[in-house]
Amino acid sequence: MIRKLSIVMCALMLALSAHSVALAAPPKNIVLFVCDDLGTDVGCYGNPAIKTPHIDQLAREGTRYTHAFCTTASCSASRSVILTGLYNHANAQYGHEHSYHHFRTYDNIKSLPVRMREAGYRTARIGKFHVGPEEVYKFDISLPGNARSPVQMADHCRELFAAKSDKPFFLYICTADPHRSGARVQSDPHKPDAFGNKPGGYPDVEEVTYDPKDVIVPRFLPDTPTCRAELAQYYQSVSRIDQGLGRLVQNLKDAGVYDNTVILFTSDHGIAFPGGKTTLYEGGMVVPMIVQDPAHRPASGSGTVSDAMISLVDLTPTLLDIAGVQGIDKLGLHGRSFLPTVGQESTPNFDEVNASHTFHEITMYYPMRVVRTRQYKLIWNIAHPLPFPFASDLWEAPTWQEKYQEGPDAKYGQRTVHDYIHRPQFELYDLKADPDEIHNLAQSPEHKAVLAELIGKLKAFQKRTADPWILKWDYE
Image (cartoon, rainbow, N blue to C red; front, side):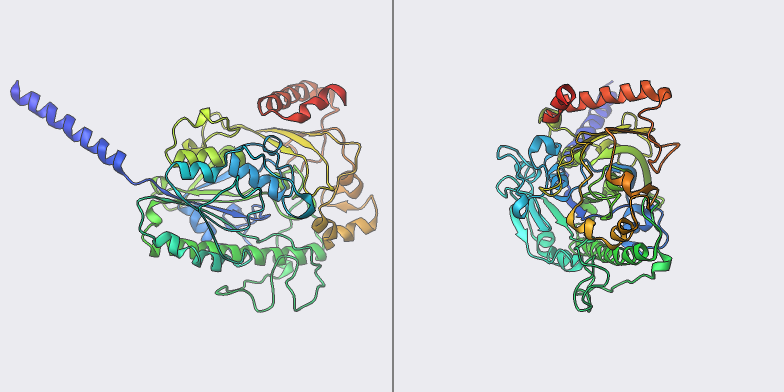
């Protein structure tokens, strides 16, 4: 009897010891790598024409999400969502922060870097920032680096990785690639092209160029020589990002911290072409999302592919969850942690997302609200009597101008120029039958019940997130 009791006590002590070791395990470092205007145009997302070996390797070591979405396809607004866990209609970063646009987040918002510092993290940012005021988005340090030179930025993070500290680090690294600069294809050969590629390249970057005939043209864009030439430039910029990610991973390994660092790789929204950026069609909403968590590295080396529907509004709660913050559901955030989906191919109850766009530039008022399920998407164009406005860089895009000059009946991808500019109040698409979002079912008698259900979901979303534009249902 005494011997049995001793065995039980020993087992209990071993279990408690193991539990104590688990509790004592150092918290994970976190790297959030955000690209600028990158769609899913990378190898691991099924594009065989583009060379992105480091992004592809990250996917093989982690979880790649096939249904990740932004909430607004506008740079500042989307970044505010990433860094607050709140839709931009609630944090007041309705559009661009810079210049005369001057949209600013509410002073009383507690942002992700502030919460991470409270959780015991050293916080650092490098590259594109594009939100304000800085007091709201306060990081401990801002590292120098050219946001068009991801390899250089990665090297400027070495000190952060190598520093001896009992605190883990949270790094927010944001490229300016592959953002469109507004330059035309036939620009000064001595200056960067439309996607930041310049003669002589960037430090420590092996510039990868592409033949326009080899690129893959998304179906929402016109397959023209002009479009292909622009896509080749875009691809070159994406390959520069890839090398920056590769250098970042190598620097983490050299510092001996890679195996205790979670890396999240994503973009603020889709590609910078009309039909992508500033729209809430799939070309604007769908973003890459890869999570490399050492706790969930697939043994096979082939990576996990998750079909969970997640959103950039979920990033703040997810990162707080990784950091071990308790009571996240009581913080008043709009998103939820998708940490339970990491390493899982399918997760119940991740089957719906919302989107909320109001401005891009100050001159571009066009509020849209979206509910997207596995099968259907409903877009409510609140300002539908207005023509759809253009970002200055997208308006100048040669791909658009070529088609625009052909007239309103010219085909731009799967739509006419007229239909792209003039939109109805509701757009309802069956994405399984119509992935190109061409056949609007909002007036279809057979889909009357679906429309009513999704309108109900939209109203509930707006009420839940304190959306001021919910008033439009009553008086407009």
